[in-house]
Length: 501
Figure: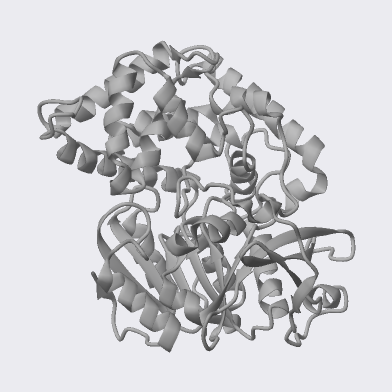
């Protein structure tokens, strides 16, 4: 299973905003002057022309395809904005995570989930699709039926065997080559460092001297990378559920295996006493049963009526998706009950929602493609199968019930057209304004320790802890967290010490 980076929402409904009729320009931005080289000046000085689209304003910015060669070609970045209702503090840029989740749709369809009304009143709320994602110039790879074979396919042979590894590598190689053929040079330039440079350009053309930013999950990682590259441009920045930039993929995968296993334990502890729970006995008994179910579908995938099947990788995503939020845990009762009855449809519905697959078999976005493309540029992969197997043993030691199904994640990037040149390292952002780093103690996707470490690495990091379950902390009903963040964003109140809520 690839690393599940995660997002503030596990699935986002497409908004009608993108399909609204566009009207004449209603506003134009006033870029702030920036001292940049001549090749970059046209990008930093461009004027955004905002069109009315439904209840929002929408625009498109141009960015260099390759920041190292800005005159060669350019790409488009899609933006959506809700203007402040009251006296404006500035523009608050949002990123919901992924990589691959649409920030445009996040604002268009889930604005109240993204930020509370008090913040909406005082900021222009700006969503954007990063390079490679959604309505921006996007990564494109397979047709839907081909993508189904990758997302829901089952490689031949026993998991971890030579035949299974060969089958996985052949499929991912074909996927990478299709991405290259359909995406072209963009595929080499969707790394997070390039997205952070886009973010700085957007700040300038929105007319902001400093970047006010709220990033969830991978969006928090993007904000961390931005702070490291532009510490003097950091304004009020909130990083919710961050990823530790000093870790490579093996360490990230191991921590996530532990995190999802801990979250599964929490779910089972609440499930077992209930009459509707498909499990009995102790939590350990139930955890062993979950592992047995994964082992069983790995050997014998459950067929569905549409020709797809639920194997172990598909089932793991179906289990993981509801674990992002305790409010969606009841879906796991139905999931396990139906799988135990040999029924595939509910599991597929959960995975369809996670990846944006619609009932007609098409995909509403490009989450899977963008996630893979960004990950393969951000994290170096190694091709030593013996090392992969040793890492698999370490995963089982760390997470004995789920760990085996997080193993071999390097295979997803092993034959990618472009190798990662990124070297994981701590980001300190010396001289940056105070940055709030939010972590939830039982977050499955971005484990709490990452928030602790990111807050420690950043010279101006302040840790805000939410004690509880689920992914990310802000606007989740914890008054202590919400008050701390709102006072910081609205009034510039910086906590004098780390906050525990």
